[in-house]
Image 1 (cartoon, rainbow, N blue to C red):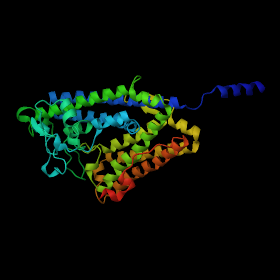
Image 2: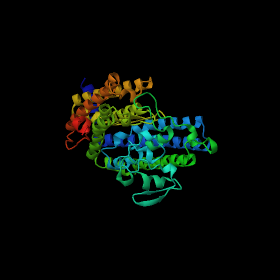
Image 3: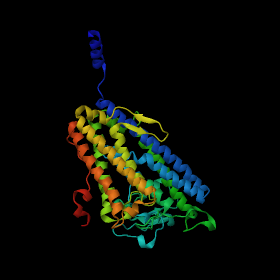
Image 4: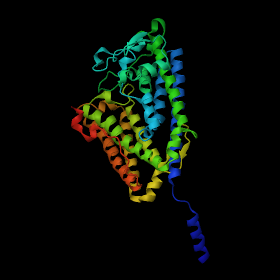
Length: 416
């Protein structure tokens, strides 16, 4: 008996702690690297599909390009949780995922949808104009290049709605405007908008293809850069692993800010308050339900230290959940339950949309079923944010703040 107890005691002493800070932030960086690498791979597949559409325009190649865009959103949306706590990511993100956009900057739009207002370039239509005046300077746009998009057009005059690059510019070029309002239906751009000669519709098909190619090339290069930031010698990885407490703060800031101000507020509740389909994140393709779901899954991934790659392999290791459980098992249990519940609510919203009840229909004024579906996810996100705050306290990282939203914090201000 004595020998048995001695052996058990030795085993207990020899067993490592459930998790350590260094291991947790390393797992976090590994998941970020895998997520951005998957996003890059998917963008490269999108580029191949775009090249096929441009070289051989048809209904088939057009649909293949749209399918590739949808597939590319799956890994990318799971990386959004890395934004708010990592300045390297947050400073870069506007190049690849900025929204909403004044699409008339890029291409033709329906006259009834041009809002103009403070944005003088809401009707610029770069595709139809080989030269134009921008910020008082004459711009030669005879050749549409990634440099033109990134350095001249994107956020021209400091207007955030002048989105010329990234996923949503590409989405608009593939789908066109969604003119269905809060009725069912996505954008209906015809493949002939990329055709040649007499088959070309709406003019400038060659330039439209050039813009689509340039935007996709730029997306690939931007994702290559970000994947490198999380590689073994990358600056983003170093920022979270060289100081474990800073890394934990980045993790929790990203989780809380995406949960609360960004997703629950700006991306979901605001649209319900305004009953405005223009507030959809993927408004041209009607893919918003998937964007919301994979954002929620990304938060779940980070807390549990586990990410399933697009090839089915799994990246996992010491998790934030392990670390919080060591500090306070009740806090970990509550947060784990809340994260699971949020993903479940998002899955219900996703399933409803895939069954034909599209997200823009859910936003219609007086649609009680749609509002209930969206608000169930909003409420779950808000609740999980409160649990994230308790995790912050349990770990002694009390200097962390989360991004807010008027839609949650001061609803009356939304209508002022």
